[in-house]
Image (cartoon, rainbow, N blue to C red; front, side):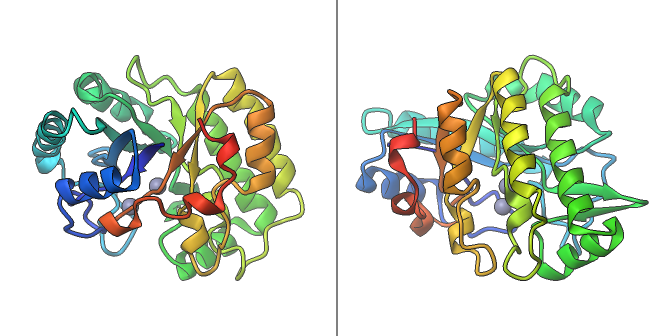
Length: 266
Ligand SMILES: [Zn+2]
Ligand SMILES: [Zn+2]
């Protein structure tokens, strides 16, 4: 059992649970491998649009994070494989800075995720998973659910074709995050086709997918990222699905693993 998406005490919007507590929980659960994928620092010239300004890791803590995960990796190497990783934001227009960052730090990473949380609409940026009210504003600014979903999938497609250098992460994070508030704001009818079309890009780009259980626990989502039908289509296309708990606390390790179709998981 592998978990490829785990946060840490270095997450500014997470918990202070220690790296060891995550690893011990993972061992207890029977994991054979786990990747810490803390939110990478945002590009220096990108202004985090969320009021709490805590979407990415503090850049001053990056080296401590990498070193401490490496230490934990050594400490527990006979019990479990621990990988050093990051959840890197793909931010449209900030490719150059993201590439510079990965050129510098990518060599320390074993495994990473590329995620889209931020969308540019007109002159503003929106963090689409931050809150229902931000989501509502994004929806209003984009004009319609169809426009918002189309933009999200356009940016996801860009993230696959973007040149982020040799250390570009090869796994796409939570590919249906745009559905996080779906029980409040109904997805457009076309969402499913957009998601299915996106799978072809994932396949062409030889990338893998984060099969993320966190959405199941979000009160306005209640489904995995991606949901079963899309996960099955991805698997049928030969796209590897890597389970991700997206845990922000040690007790959230294995979050919704049982609710996913484990036969699809690599
Ligand atoms: Zn987070
Ligand atoms: Zn994420």
